[in-house]
Length: 305
Image (cartoon, rainbow, N blue to C red; front, side, top):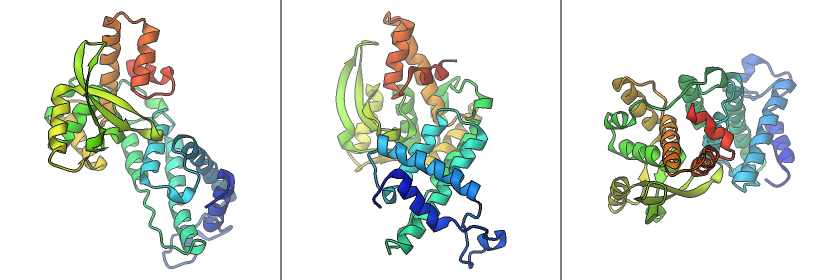
């Protein structure tokens, strides 16, 4: 679809808005008003979120056509919002709006583009449930670092999950940075001037299309390299990884903080390493923010409580 963000959202709204549609018809799979939106106020609320999402995609992913949206973009946007500690109600509204966007895109493809395109944005519900479980909202803020992350990793049942967790703990990478890694993303080794240790380099692409290098121990790098020498790619299922960490946390007598808790551990350790290298607090914060791919140092401060 061509046109501005606001034009595209208006065209999608036309596909899903049906003023005054009765509730019994909107929940009836056999009725033409099934899954439609009947309230002007609700539709405007959804459109506002769509516009914000489309502008996010334009800025961070260079996507101008909303018909090119996929589940990866949905996950990145939800993660982007979660990291700013939204209220529970606002996150639920975002998830609902993205659910209606999925329906609107399917209808637009069928009715306007004359194509049967299968959009699947169910990842939004997984992330919403995870955020609810872990209380990733402003009124439930607390330190999410694990007391003993190494023990947590030891108790993971899946060997690929163990490797992904080690990468996150050592590098501070987000889950999308470790969920899929290809051989060409391994860039060799280099000296980490902060710790004076040789580290392995992995090129990652994370939320918002942010790319860059992350550093892991030589042991972890070699383990990943050995795996990729036998398989075309390293890939994990996000939901299965989440469940494995949750069970491991219970076994390890930890609060289940999902894989995001490992980023908290990284931030605290890396701040200490920069401090030992005689960096000022502000410089430590700036460097760790850069390594964690945060837009602002103030975000990183949340991890240092």
